[in-house]
Length: 425
Image 1 (tube, rainbow, N blue to C red):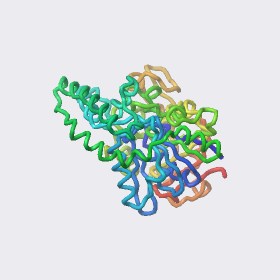
Image 2: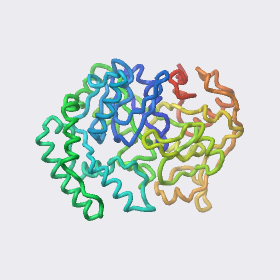
Image 3: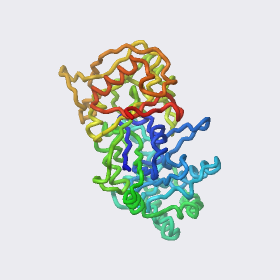
Image 4: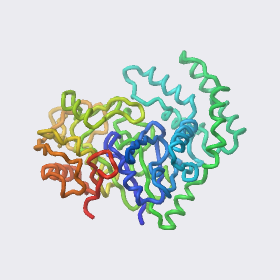
């Protein structure tokens, strides 16, 4: 049995939710290891559509234990809404979900401050989802945050909540923002504590004991490599580490016990929010990719920026994450294109570069160098094996792998569960 980390290798929205759902058919434990309810994983089960924000995707597989790891920042009110919505649809959640007692909690004052800060930045705004993710991680680092273990001690949590809320009230006054109703907001939190507190546990023990018992463990990441707080296109990034190493720090299993890393790549590129995006298309092809691929945020509904596949960024991401296998998604979105382009290098101030710059101001100036390949202009959505793909589609995949250095493991040709297949078995 294996411990597997699954991460996105682009700017998020690579289709990780679908690949995670595919992998969870054989998983005993699924661990979400970073981020918060700013992410959304979309899964189609038959005719039913599920969008999961905090709860690991394994919740849709009976018998799978799901863990929200300590690296996650957790909004208890939002979590209960998600639990309640799933249970009303007949999904058993409470008995199969555990929350790390070390999770940092998000409260409404974090969300309000997130919005205030974005407004203050004006044209330099990051494009956050305003879910309070950044402020909650900032409180964690400044050692003033409140942790999920307190949900079992409501009196102690209330005292600390009120003390922290007063600090934020001062910030709101300084910024000229509306006052914060501490009593009303605490009442919302207090209402969900009896429901969530029984799910809180020392999940580090649970994960390591599962590994001792040779269980199949899947670590589920959110967002993508180029939104990582350290390695992404800073400052246009999220507030957590989205790369594979965060599975250990945010999930509680040591590096020596991780067996493989699966990286998810979309057959083209997308990005949401502000920040450099070298292959972005501002033409009819970009609109076609958005419409055909349904490229609208699962959490915010915002339209995604679309562009050609960027092999420079993807190759660096494969290296950085130690990717052993690649899952390629949304190949079918390219079915009707006559010609495909792949970015193989950048031009920067008259020089050709083939590695990703760490400085976002440089990345904003690069001009992509493209090579072209003929499209296959055939329907791939009915393919159920690699051999059933059109020859030109296979050629395109081979070229992507040559440029990124990855080894293909999974291909997805549509949103449904049966439109995903394993390669090389």
